[in-house]
Each structure stands twice: as structure tokens, then as C-alpha cells.
Length: 427
Image 1 (cartoon, helix red, strand yellow):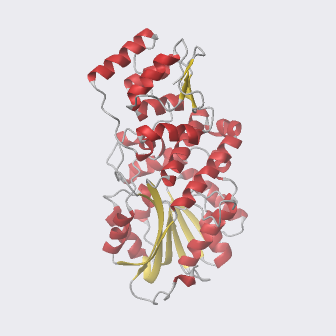
Image 2 (cartoon, helix red, strand yellow; image 1 turned 45 degrees about the vertical axis):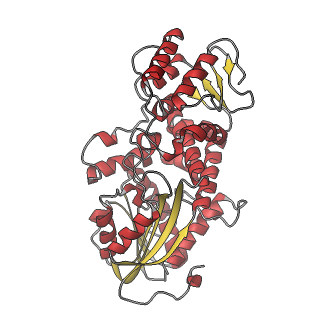
Image 3 (cartoon, one colour; image 1 turned 120 degrees about the vertical axis):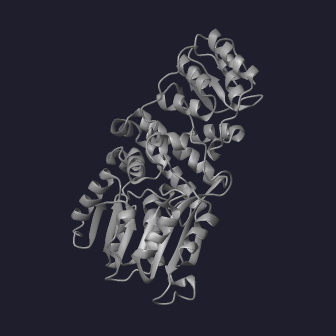
């Protein structure tokens, strides 16, 4: 490790203590211009003493996240390389609890803060940090609505910059790595339609409809009538506008409604794309039975959801994702989700793993964000742009290393027509 005089060597030692490493895998540059660490390693820039103070008060992922979101720390290079280096020793992407520091390590951090003039009160968290998880019963309707608003009601203009023209906020399906993002998202929407066996005149429920992209695709291409429900007021407003502009108000209805309050079934098919991660394990039996009851006999449900492939199914609530991105979000394993669907007496017809596809999708979203950085900051604020950059890069690495996966599970309610003998009906 190459070291210079100045502040950086002490910062590097403090970072090594927090990460639980002998040597840090990044190059540290301090506010005085000094540097320490491997010269060819990814750069982490400490802009102020407040960064060290945040880490001192919250050693581990939370302190580092707060410092990055607030701008006290920056990663000006390739965010994927920087996060991969940190994750190689700290396993941040897995949402593991922060490492418990020994007394001597805490004392060493305090001494470093004193020498660098960084000792002081705990800085206030950045305003982008959610406080949803501190109020009300978990997964009550009121708290779920607040959690959804925290994530999705951050400005439609901001999401349009990140997601691109498709406005689809879930894993795309890529023919190959050169497939464009919009084409890959259209392929995903069409795959869902074919798996559900959509035919003209069918009535379809889209749970967690987002900005209406699936509803528009299904109505326009397959001649079905769609009811889309979301808890996000901003999503519903833009989805309704897109429906009107497409001339499909007679075929597509967008509602601000909790899935638990939908009572106007039956539906011939139900899509749930990237929504069940918000349901919660305790509410999962209610979720699966509610959607089953809304289906006609023989109707199909497609559940598209991220899953834990390894590690905890309920990450440390003080880690970055629950604090800043998805408060109260809960990912089940594939086995847990299949069990929940089967417990609701829904027959599993098909399971398709799309893990690699989500890594490609997330990398495309990060490119969009970085290519439109100034516009994104103007639309959502610098802190919000930093949250999304960090969370999407971290998530991409989680999919690439197999920590997380994403699966489409196709199920059918008993009764009605028999399912096709082979997958050729949708492949």
C-alpha cells in the first residue's frame, strides 16, 4: 500500500478498522489532497471531516452510506469497481448486520477523529433517509402506502431519466448483451402476456401497475381490458395520462388502491411484476389467497419477484437498502414464494430464473443516470441521485454474484381449461 503524509493515511486506517480488513481495497483521498492506498485501486474521496464523524457514530454500511448520500464521501470513478472492492471484504450487498467493533477498535477510531479534528455530535441523517419503518404496524395499509410513497413519489421526471422511454421499473428480458434496454423491456412485457395466455376480451388485473407500461402493452397488443392498481399517486397520475394519450381509456383503468381492497373480480389473468417484494412475509398468505380469489377458475397469475439466493431473507434494518430505498421491503427465497403460492391452492405451471437479465438491466439504468446526471440532480436532488446510483450498482453486483435472483412464477387456479402441455405456448 502506497502512503503519503497528511490526513489520508489515518483515514485509510480508520476505514480498514470499519471494514475489518488489514489493508483497504480502495485508494483514499482526503480533504487536504493527501492520498493513501493502492495507486491503481478505485478512488474514495473524503470531502470533509464530517465523513469520518458519520462513520464514527455509525461504523459500517450505514455510516458510509450516509456519508456518500450527503456528499461527504464521493466515488468519482467507476461505481461498480468501487463497490465491488468494498463488497469483497464487507459483503455490503448481502445486507448483513454491521460488524461489532472491539473496544480497542472503537478507541482507535475516536483517537483518529480527535487528531483530525473530526470529533463532534452525530450529524443529522440525509433527508433522503426513510423514517417509515419507525411508525405504525409493519405492513398495515397506512404504513405500506407511506413506504411506497417514499420510493416511488420522488418525481416522474427523475424516473423517466433513469428508466428511459419504456418507463418499466423491473427486470427486462435480454436476447443478448447487446439488446437495447427498451427492446428488452418490451420483450419482458410481451413474455408476461404470452405466459398469461391473454386473448381479446379478457379482463386483467395488474397489481402494482407502476406507470402503466404493462397495462398499455396488454391492451394495445392483446385487446384485453386492464385494471391497474398502485399506491403511488405520482405513478397513477402519469399512468392515467399515458392511457389517455394512447386513446385506451375505454380499455385501461388506473386506480390508487391497495391490492387488499380490490373486490371487483373475477379476472381472467393477474400480473404482479416487481410488487410482491413490498408485501411482507407475514402478509404473504393474504396476498396469495386474495389474488387467487380474484381469479376465475382456470385463470393464471404471474408473480415476478426478486429473491434471496443466499443469506438472510430479512436484511439488517440499518443497512442501506431498507433505510434509503425500500423501507419494509422483504424478499423471499424462491422456495418460500413457491410454497406460499401452492399453499393458496394455485398450481405452478412454470418457473423462469432471470438473474443475469436483472444485472444487465441495472447496469443500463446506471448508465442512464450517469449520462443524465445534471438533469437527474435537478429533477430529484443530488442526494436522491446518489441513493439511486449506489443502490442500483450494489444490486447489479448482487445479481452478478448470485446473492440475489429474480424469478417469474406462473400459476393457475384450479378449474377451467387445462394448461398447455408444453412451454411452447409462450416461448
